[in-house]
Length: 250
Image (cartoon, rainbow, N blue to C red; front, side, top):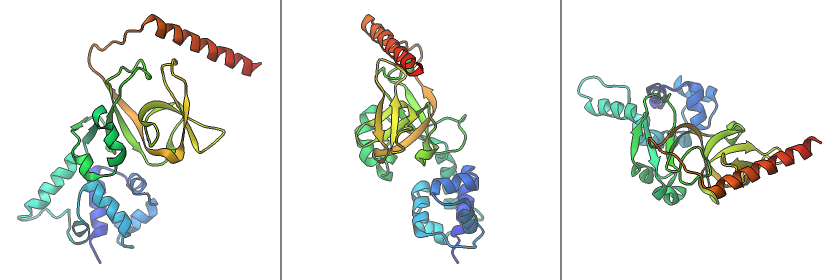
């Protein structure tokens, strides 16, 4: 029997994940992960491939080497453990100039490795990514801010009126407040905090990734200046929304 089960347990604890959290990231049931870790079952190939990509290990590493063995002269094992611990805190940054390439390379390890990374020690263990946003659609969040998001693996986990980075084939990378569409489970309604922008729908099938906003990083002393036309549009849209709500209530 391979040492894959032991390695799965070791890697999970290295990242500080519970069995429930690790199983969710792998797309399997917690009970199945438990069976793998307790060596009551051998991990499936697709699960091992996902772990290989996640931790940047080879299948041979997972199946044949005891990753937790740092005894004696096993310097490589020690270095691997140190890198994995560091990797758990690294956040890849997707700048605006890389947004177009991200749509094609979001699942390509080589593309992701080229992105700059940073760390935020206040974040709990998890799968995070940061995206630079431009424009005034999410004011008061200023243009040029960096949104740090945690990966949402299932659209069913998306909560209405929360802010997310939504990556879709047609709309690209956008930072919006998401509303569940009660009329159709196959659509998400994306809403801007700046009411000068109208809400719009995206098809769930077009959504590639969703990242729940956890932190907003913006430059110090950044202050958006509204012009008269923007303020007029804002007031007009608010009046329209109030009128619509009154009609619905009556």
